[in-house]
Length: 246
Ligand SMILES: [Zn+2]
Image 1 (cartoon, rainbow, N blue to C red):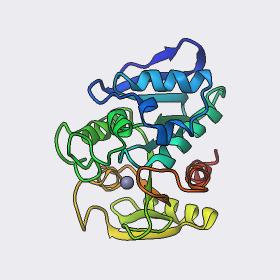
Image 2: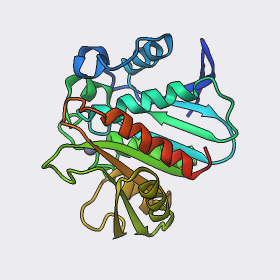
Image 3: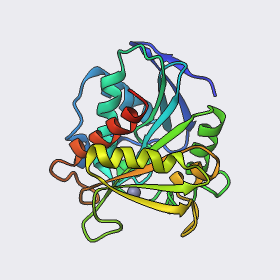
């Protein structure tokens, strides 16, 4: 995978995971109304028209991924990820942070959970699915740790603010979730073995591949931004980075 320097933002590099998944985020007013229209966000939205972009800031140290938009209609975590990216865009880091704010921009545009009818958090194990391509990118870039950030509606599963993790085969998933739970007050939900109850979740497949991962969930209605939900998701993301001293 070859990263290009962003012309106007010298500390930011970007590449593409897919050139088929692009969409006009601005068409979804439920998310667009919460995005500051600064030059950098316009750059990110433009890149998202052509596929799934991945952004890179820093080099060396731990390689971390902050991922969101695996479910296109979970908006708060995608906005929070964009805010986090803004916060780091002018910094020279001695660690490496990768950001995928919009895993499937076309699904975000349509305000839909699935991508091409497929739940990306149940298809990471299926060859050439979009989430499988994200997993392969994680492996190829030798990313060390993954935080996948979602939202959950009241009366859905889990329906409350939480951090999902597992103890086996990568116990550090559990350690990260314990830290984040203490730090943010999100409830830690830990499974003994990754992928035991169902197949194809991004977090589980990363853990199975030996890359410690967690899933963050904050409460917000699907397809809309609940009060305080962007701030809560951003708090989870900062806590994920905080575990690594960032
Ligand atoms: Zn989700």
